[in-house]
Length: 295
Image (cartoon, rainbow, N blue to C red; front, side, top):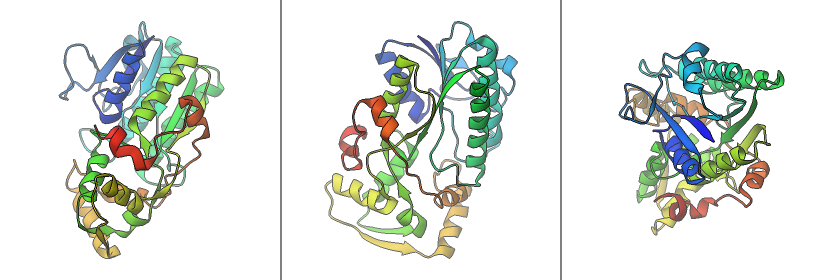
């Protein structure tokens, strides 16, 4: 198939493109005209500005399926979260319905149902619109909701690995206590390939590893996988946790910020049954992630 892949220069999108091409598909990767990914062979697209269906219709000519893997953690002038997560995806989905590109895969996130963060609200808005189009029979979408996605090239994964290397670590309480169900980025990509191969599974699919644990225990497991002895772990008081998150707000590239802190209030776990049926096997266990995904 000819597949339009948005966010193809990002961590998840890059892995998706490699997996889709390995499966024999032709991937039309999208990149912002202002980014380093704006190069020959990529489809120029601007998720900050392309907020109408008319902007997307020309890009859908000859396309059989669309995979949206664009996402941001926080709001910035260059990448406003309302446009990136809500307005532009809605325009893209409307264009798909008009162009009769019925197969759409939306990469969303676990934990957004119980959260009132802007990240969660905007992600839910796009999902709701996509589901409404599905109810009208205009599209056959699959919405993938992964837990923490782990792999080489991910900002969060790099942060976890850096923390895992520390012999003495001072962690915010929510980082230690939040429950996650880490998923290998290659498993997420394999699920997308399987979805497009069958064109049968639709609706919301929770994408998780086989077992849930606290984030503190996950970082400890990464440390063990690196061959280190257990670290001395100290808990940062809540007041200092709040201050550290606000300091992170001033560093756009940092995955630690007030929005992240708020999202840690919701568990990031789910039922992997449908995900495992797509894979034809259990996902990679968190205790094997360094060996399988940190390469």
